Length: 122
Image (cartoon, rainbow, N blue to C red; front, side):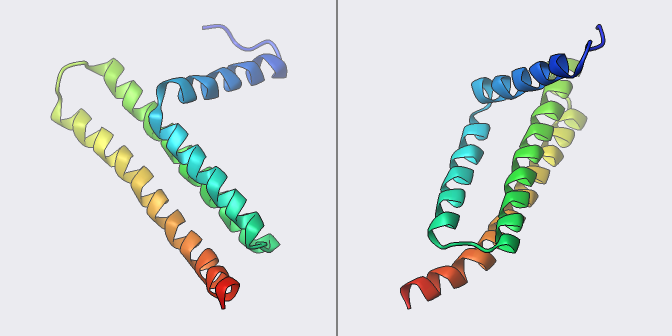
């Protein structure tokens, strides 16, 4: 495999990778749609700078963890196409990582948005 010639070639490969994720991974669409909804709702309830920082960090963490999960699953599938208990455990742990980050992000979202909703309707 040849090394990238410059920044622009590296950037093109990174964009190709993101395009591949959206073409082949249903969960990327789910995470992205949730992120769009959260950002839109953030504008409605007028998040402050710190709240935006936390929301953006959570969105990036969930999407990054999904990317890592996809990488791990694909690497494991390249190692063996046959059922292997250790590979199953690796893939399950990777999926658990995404679940944990997602749950943490939901908790952060609830801590930010529930008080906003209460004051919005009060």
